[in-house]
Structure formats: structure tokens, C-alpha cells
Image (cartoon, rainbow, N blue to C red; front, top):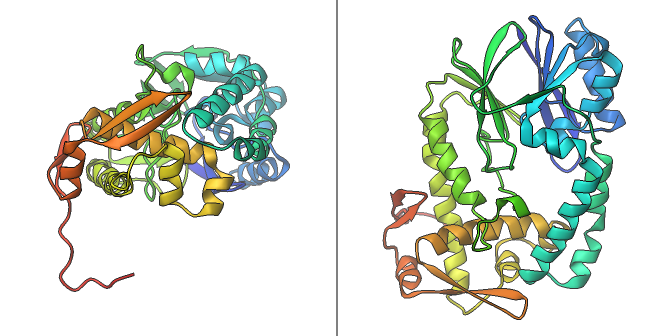
Length: 351
């Protein structure tokens, strides 16, 4: 680990994002932080404390296309001449960044409207898209990576592993020799990652599969012989298999709350979100809460606990007989793992 330095950069709304400096040949930065003055200053300061400069960076890798992970890639590329190596799908995104953001915005508006978000709430969410536009910029990748490739970075031979779910471009960079992986937001120590829904996620039947794919890919990661995961936010993960084992329980609890809401009758995904979070959170983050609810509804649809009624440009969700039984504590499978509700503690306090 002496050859790796973490540089935490400020990130609006979240707190911070980790970038990773690999001091070997070629001098490599994994993830870049967002494109803003505060992040750039923090990156320059962190590199200076590590004995180097942006101009010395020779290779940039990125774990996925979100702005806090690629926002400064073009800046670093211009100042240092560093090669940028990313998954092919991420390279496509970056080359058309401005256009793709507008395509994503249009799809997001349709998605939110379909799931019951009022027009005024959608209109009031435009600052989110301003943040997306300003937080990154397009760049041209010098090296297009594919799943299974290997790349020399910071004196390490890193294996490229595609793990879509949190985003469509999630990439792990795995050092098999040291049982170490740079994992971005694929698995975080403190929170369960959201799963985005974009047109490319949708199957022939029009349904998204990002949450199911994410949980399936987490299981694949759990089987990897890794000692340490260096993540995009927060502390490194040192017992990834155990953490992955706990994630379905998080989804179980969220699904139980959704089922309880649906016990009151048919609801849109937005209606469900209003029952899960504060009015302020739902109003300020309508797209993110819709992604979260729809992801869990995908689990409940896949297991037959919920049915979807689509018509008049929107979807309503209701419980099936199995869903009503699930509320009473029957076994439930989340992405292939059979779970039961945890019994209440005998002396738990009411909150």
C-alpha cells in the first residue's frame, strides 16, 4: 500500500470522492473527481503532498462515467498529456458527453413522468442537470478497454473487470498479485449503491434490469479472492464477501417497506417514494428516488410479489397474493438468495 496514495476531493451533496495515485510506472491516477475549482485545488494539493504534480501523471483510469469519477479527466489530459484508458462504453459516453447528457435528461423526464412525478417537480429539478453539465466535460480516450483486458498501471498489472449495475460502465481494476481491487462505487462500506436506469438498460419488454444485474454482479465480486477493495467513497472494504452477503438484507428491508405501502392500494413509484423519504428529499432528488424505488420494484416483480399495470402513460403497482403473504413474513428471494424477515427483538424500543 506504500505505493498507493488516496486523495479525497470535495464533492457537493455527497461530501468527498476518493482518487487513487499509483506511484509506479506509469504514474497513474484512478478516478479524477468532479470538474470544479475546489476539487482541482484539492487534487493539486494532494499530489503535491505525495511529491508529484498533475503535469507528471502519465495514465488516467476511470471506474465509471459519473462526473465525480471523470470530471477532471480532460483537464488532466490537457495539462499532462496523460493517456486515458477506460472501458469502451465509457469512452463512447465521454466522446459525446454534452449530447448524451441531453439524451439522458430527455429519457429521465419521460421516466419520471411515467412513474408519477408531477410536471412541476420535474421542472424544478433542472439544477440537477446543470450540475451534471458543469461537473464534467467530454474527452477522447486513448485506450479503449474491454472486460478481461490487462493494463500496466503504477507498477501493477491490473485486470479489467466489467461490473455494470450502479452504472452502465462500472469497472473494477484488479491486482491479482496483491489481492487488491479499485472498485469505484460498485461496493461501498457504509451505504448500498443506487442503480441508474438509462435507455441502454432496458430489455426487449421495456423493463429495466439494473438492480437485478447489480446484485448478480455483486455475487460474482464476492467470489473473488480479494483482501482489500479501494472504493470511490469512504473507507476501503476489507471483508467484501461478508458485506455482499449483507446487501440482500438491506434490499429485503426496503422491499418490506414498499410492500407495506402497497398494502394500502395501487401506487406509482413516486407515491411509494413519498412514503419512504421526507418531502424535501423526494422534491430535491426525484430522479434518484424513482431509480431506487423502481429498482426494488424490479425485485418484487421478478419474485411475483408485485404486479404492474401500465396504461395512460404511467405504471401503477399492486400486491399479488404472494405479496400480501410476504408482508406476513414468508420467505423471499432477493437475486437468488432466500431470506426471511428478521424477528423483532423482545425489548426493542418504539421509535
